[in-house]
Image (cartoon, rainbow, N blue to C red; front, top):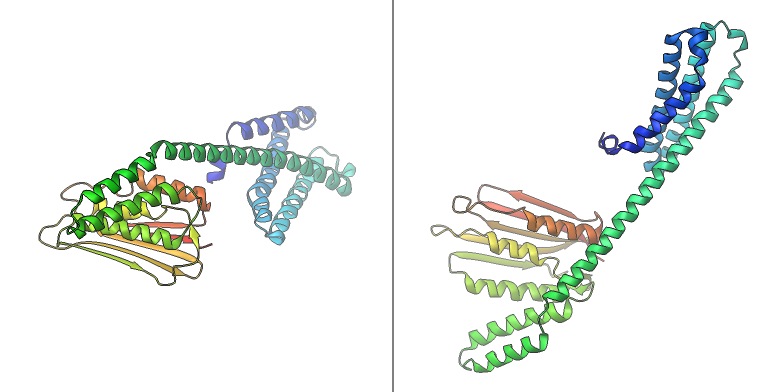
Amino acid sequence: MSRFLNYKADHILFWLLTIFFHGYTQLDLIERGGLVVFILEIVIRNGLLAISIYLILLKAIPALTNGKVLKGTSILFGSLLFYAVMKNFHDLFLYERLSMKGEYSIFHRTFYNGSIVLFYTAFATTLYLSKQWFQQREEIRKMEVEKLNTELNYLRAQMNPHFLFNSINTIFFQIDKGNAAARDTLNKFSDLLRYQLYECNRPEIPIEKELHYLKNYIDLQRLRMNENFKIEFLVDDSLRNFSLPPLLLLPFVENAFKHVSHFSQKPNEILIQIIKQEHQLILLVSNTKDESVEPTTHGGIGLANIQRRLNLIYEQRHELLTSKGVDRFEIKLSIPVI
């Protein structure tokens, strides 16, 4: 039904012209058989034609494009045969009504009706495929523009890396050598920046580097939390020797830290688990939440933007599920491993 709702002016125009042309060629039926016979001819002929055409457009063509040749071919020829047989029955009724049964030839009517349905089906299919081709080209163009804009925004957001790392080195040497914790924290922060500035300009990155980045990020976040927070980061040992787009997993981890609860009388939890099952990488992120303090924005614009990026990269070959409980929010992401 959703496909029919998407058809607008082009389908209306097609059927108006088809019905008008057919009605014009059958005007003599009004004099020979009356207005009722004329209306029946218009309604039955174009109704049967519409059934055959839309069966082919909505069922046969998708089946053929998905490799289901037998199903698609059966629907295609079945639709054509349906029109020819049903129109033949109507033509027989029409000839009897006009007292012309002696002039009825089943061979002639079958050939004529078959030619009609073939012509209109071929014409409608050509229009349909042309529209699909144009829409796909527009979608590709939009994706290319979006990709260029993303790259441009990324370049604009970059700071001068030499200035940045020189400043970090200066701060590092200003910290007392006895303050190992501060030096270690600054090193982790430096690794995060180095990864974003130098590693993430490639389309794909080794999973090992992405996991190291996530570990540093989580370690830095731990420093902001007190003993009432329980943070677990579990990684499957089999996660190695493949690549994925950089910073693909980070937004889900950031989302958990951003929206985690801040209970004072019970633990606040964040669980991040990354596993590999067959040819799928699965990310599980869950965190406790407290809606009584501040309305959660989970599932808002942020996740919508992430979903858009996943669609651009994986073209519906991924799965993103979210679950909201009374005091917990969970995300499950599954992407193919290449």
